[in-house]
Length: 88
Image (cartoon, rainbow, N blue to C red; front, top):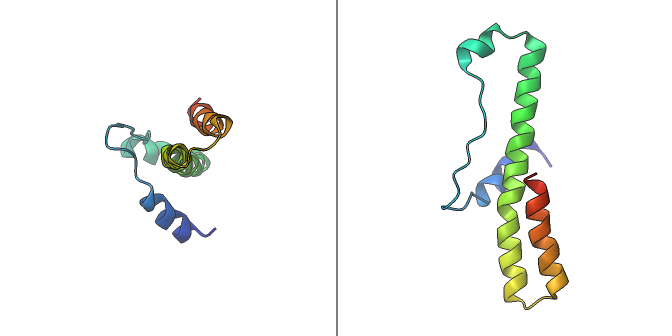
Protein backbone atom coordinates (compact mmCIF):
# COMPACT_ATOMS: atom_id res chain seq x y z
CA UNK A 1 0.00 0.00 0.00
CA UNK A 2 1.42 3.38 -0.95
CA UNK A 3 1.64 6.24 1.52
CA UNK A 4 -1.14 8.09 -0.33
CA UNK A 5 -3.42 5.03 -0.17
CA UNK A 6 -2.67 4.72 3.54
CA UNK A 7 -3.63 8.34 4.17
CA UNK A 8 -6.89 7.93 2.23
CA UNK A 9 -7.78 4.78 4.14
CA UNK A 10 -6.93 6.40 7.50
CA UNK A 11 -9.20 9.37 6.74
CA UNK A 12 -12.15 7.02 6.19
CA UNK A 13 -11.79 5.67 9.71
CA UNK A 14 -11.71 8.68 11.98
CA UNK A 15 -11.62 8.24 15.73
CA UNK A 16 -14.94 8.02 17.52
CA UNK A 17 -16.31 11.32 18.83
CA UNK A 18 -16.11 10.17 22.45
CA UNK A 19 -12.36 9.39 22.27
CA UNK A 20 -9.66 11.96 23.06
CA UNK A 21 -6.31 10.71 21.74
CA UNK A 22 -3.33 12.87 20.88
CA UNK A 23 -0.16 11.39 19.49
CA UNK A 24 3.02 12.65 21.14
CA UNK A 25 4.92 15.29 19.21
CA UNK A 26 8.42 16.56 19.75
CA UNK A 27 8.64 20.27 20.58
CA UNK A 28 10.10 21.95 17.47
CA UNK A 29 12.83 23.80 19.40
CA UNK A 30 13.94 20.51 20.98
CA UNK A 31 13.61 18.59 17.73
CA UNK A 32 15.91 21.06 15.97
CA UNK A 33 18.65 20.26 18.51
CA UNK A 34 18.41 16.49 18.06
CA UNK A 35 20.82 14.62 15.82
CA UNK A 36 19.36 13.79 12.42
CA UNK A 37 19.21 10.06 13.22
CA UNK A 38 17.03 10.80 16.28
CA UNK A 39 14.71 12.99 14.19
CA UNK A 40 14.34 10.23 11.59
CA UNK A 41 13.56 7.73 14.36
CA UNK A 42 10.96 10.14 15.78
CA UNK A 43 9.24 10.52 12.41
CA UNK A 44 9.19 6.74 11.92
CA UNK A 45 7.68 6.28 15.37
CA UNK A 46 4.98 8.85 14.64
CA UNK A 47 4.16 7.09 11.37
CA UNK A 48 3.80 3.74 13.15
CA UNK A 49 1.70 5.29 15.93
CA UNK A 50 -0.62 6.93 13.39
CA UNK A 51 -1.11 3.66 11.51
CA UNK A 52 -1.74 1.75 14.73
CA UNK A 53 -4.26 4.33 15.91
CA UNK A 54 -6.08 4.16 12.58
CA UNK A 55 -6.24 0.37 12.74
CA UNK A 56 -7.63 0.57 16.27
CA UNK A 57 -10.30 3.02 15.07
CA UNK A 58 -11.47 0.43 12.51
CA UNK A 59 -12.00 -2.28 15.11
CA UNK A 60 -15.22 -0.91 16.69
CA UNK A 61 -16.73 -0.70 13.20
CA UNK A 62 -15.85 -4.34 12.62
CA UNK A 63 -17.26 -5.35 16.00
CA UNK A 64 -20.55 -3.52 15.30
CA UNK A 65 -20.88 -5.22 11.92
CA UNK A 66 -20.18 -8.63 13.41
CA UNK A 67 -22.69 -7.99 16.20
CA UNK A 68 -25.41 -6.90 13.74
CA UNK A 69 -24.78 -10.00 11.65
CA UNK A 70 -25.49 -12.18 14.69
CA UNK A 71 -22.09 -13.79 14.29
CA UNK A 72 -20.76 -16.42 16.61
CA UNK A 73 -19.85 -15.14 20.08
CA UNK A 74 -16.26 -16.33 19.59
CA UNK A 75 -15.87 -14.08 16.53
CA UNK A 76 -17.14 -11.04 18.42
CA UNK A 77 -14.88 -11.87 21.37
CA UNK A 78 -11.89 -12.07 19.02
CA UNK A 79 -12.75 -8.65 17.56
CA UNK A 80 -12.99 -7.06 20.98
CA UNK A 81 -9.82 -8.76 22.21
CA UNK A 82 -7.93 -7.43 19.19
CA UNK A 83 -8.84 -3.89 20.24
CA UNK A 84 -7.63 -4.58 23.77
CA UNK A 85 -4.35 -6.11 22.61
CA UNK A 86 -3.65 -3.29 20.15
CA UNK A 87 -3.91 -0.71 22.91
CA UNK A 88 -1.44 -2.39 25.28
